[in-house]
Length: 363
Image 1 (cartoon, rainbow, N blue to C red):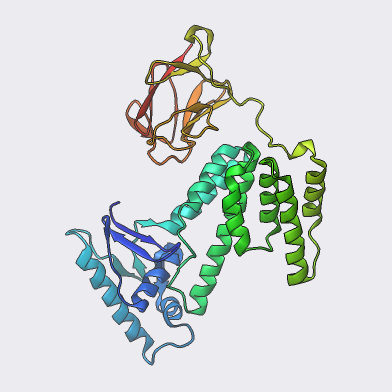
Image 2: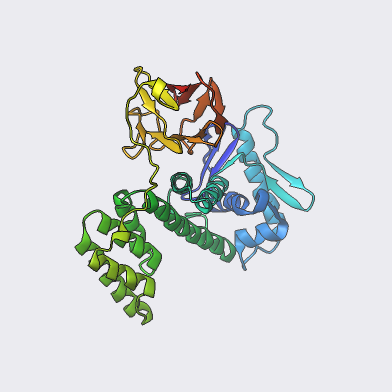
């Protein structure tokens, strides 16, 4: 990864042109963390002084700040390659750190993609985008960097946003699957946030769909006790209704799978509107709505290859033809050797999923 990469969703990690940069000293770490969470990675004297020292600044705060900026500038310059330029500079009234790759930015961008997919009820794409967002995290935000009120508040906001995205991700997954793969993750987050009723309801539903009705009901009872002890409250009507539905084994608790989900089958291309040809020559039919390709057993076309992501891509109809769309895969999608996020398909196009080649055939 070229340029300056900073990760603050967990323990601070800094890489320059792919090489780890050791950042000595708590204030240097805090200064880097502060730049990383400020809008546009830029801050005024007042911003940076407040984030470094809170309400206990040194006697000459501006001079002290300049000293720490100089230390940071020298540290990055010593690790930089010729021609990289000054990574910390002055831009009018603010100082700016030129970060090329920032995990907070990647997290926020993936959440936006997930929200957009959820709004159009594209739950597979939403689950993949939210999953990519959560993959940016390695622990609590700004771990080991906080210690002033403003940084503490920002870390709290980021951690709260993380659990919001966990819930959005779980909702998306539960729209498309039984949810058994969620159980251990939800249990871990619920242990840290026992008052989150939405999280508890998602765990109850995933347990029930996995054939663990008794565990789902026990999860409800634990939540009721926690709410009573901590807040003196009863569970919400929504959570009580879910418990009742689980007791009655209501049919609506089953996942709302799309009726048009494709079934994997081999047929002659002359009888199909479109097919994909696998590396072994096998022809697989494409559904008229969409076909998901990936390594996961839930994919419509399963490709057992480590280069392929669990839900790597989908081929969908746009009303006039077929389009291939990357679902946030690790190794990307290419059409005829050109990397793409989304691309219309023509007969004979070569689709590469992380290096696994498929041939698109139209009727």
